[in-house]
Image 1 (cartoon, helix red, strand yellow):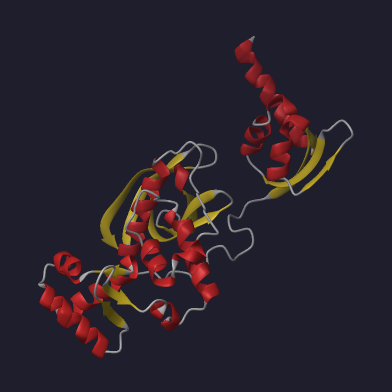
Image 2 (image 1 turned 180 degrees about the horizontal axis):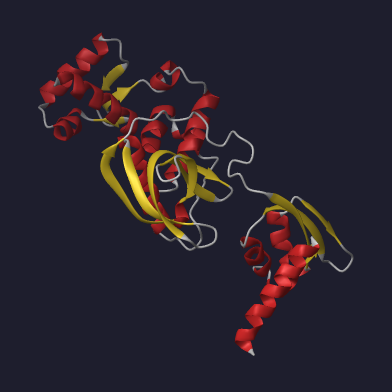
Length: 298
């Protein structure tokens, strides 16, 4: 249909800046005469399409036309492109993306100030595949089912109506309605295994915000005080907002930490460069854990 072809011509000119009539004709599989007629139609409709003959000539759009006509401000365009850069980082291998199309529409100059990559340094693809599968399930409103590992390593079967994907504190989460728990829950993507999307549909409203409530994950927190050696200074700067440095270079750092088994894993990740100062109960728990582990090395 001509209307579709006219739109294609506009999009191609936005992307390529200029094309010859023969190039457009070949790309759209029509005659050069048809291209000339289409350009005439666009001009009569008020679109600033013009042709230039001779060397370096071709068919052009008046520079800045779409940019000036769009209802978004320059700042809003930059924010849209920045957000798309962030989401696009999940699937950097794809070239024909909404990001590229909007960059052509808005002008790519405003998108060069930011680059975001949510992938880990290990470049594992499992989480990317999970993200893509869940994204499609959300858009098609199809039920997802999977095995989910709790913080204690227990695996349970979950059937979920997926509503939204979100990123918080270095991790991707799925937010949805869990049929087994009869409640809305968050699921960390790294803990989802054997993911399958079924043909069963659902009809639930998608919340405008999922990270707006305090303490979303209903976890209990306590103040953890640590003494950390100067060898781990980079982690202190990265992970703590409250700390003091002593004359010997070591740090005394405080952090609100969720109660659970993972406190031992966190402290152990510092190796011999960290000591728990408070609370005393956590000191004793870690001491008992280390003694239990030591029996395997006697």
